[in-house]
Length: 333
Ligand code: SF4
Image 1 (cartoon, rainbow, N blue to C red):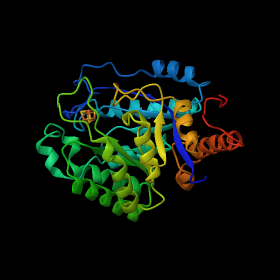
Image 2 (image 1 turned 45 degrees about the vertical axis):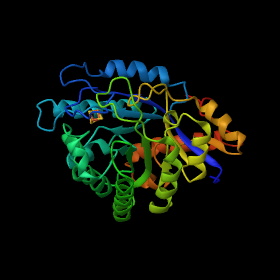
Image 3 (image 1 turned 120 degrees about the horizontal axis):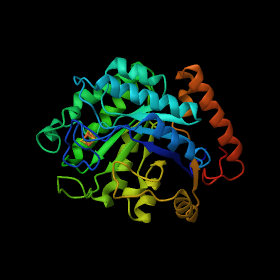
């Protein structure tokens, strides 16, 4: 892939449940425990079948969290597992992000996911006194443990920083250095997302948006800190100005993440269409290319059925990207 190539993942997000026992004050996603009907397998099958001719490759399984000691925890994990298995059976590649998991839970979900993710957000414990005061899952050491376990389990992993939640510039750099160190031990971090806090209509905290004009500078710093094999991802729906988006790409970001109908975490900010992004990129001589939710260097970490599913998609993408595939919309079902 040339250095004039920017990637994205043609994706659709399935939410097993919006219920979450944490209460991050910037959240626009959660409902109180017990206030949500979980996504049934029948409903999920109906949705997934309708996506089979839409060019979708990745199914992002994104869930609110059931408390680790709650009696519903095992049913919750089973539902996430079943959704992953269903997505695989219907020809998609699942990627789950369901908050901190136990080692055994991670090992189980590895069986039905080609990659997994968890935002480290920020390493500073100061946020436990402010935006994360009522969010036990946001204890930084607890989240860092997930990154270590993912490495130990050989799970290709996506993590990232949430920016503009009252951390300092040096807090951001420290978080990036922590990710670089954990990757040095295991080699499993495939992407780091730089996600600007963007005010939504349902959140409690009325802080500022992240100063988006400083994002390109942070991308440059991240590119210096992180090993070159880790892809830097920026979310185009949270960067309202095309020039700022291009500035971030010029500084070393090279991926636009999963693009689908809805950003479930930032529902006030719909994703742009790949065609729109391709037009912006083409004007400066860059190409937009779809990618899978697992990078090729990790294919051998997968169990055989998953590896076969990934290889099938790689073959399809390789065929279709010659000579000039700008979007995945023409992919066959
Ligand atoms: S941001 Fe995530 S962990 Fe925090 S309350 Fe919302 S869904 Fe739960």
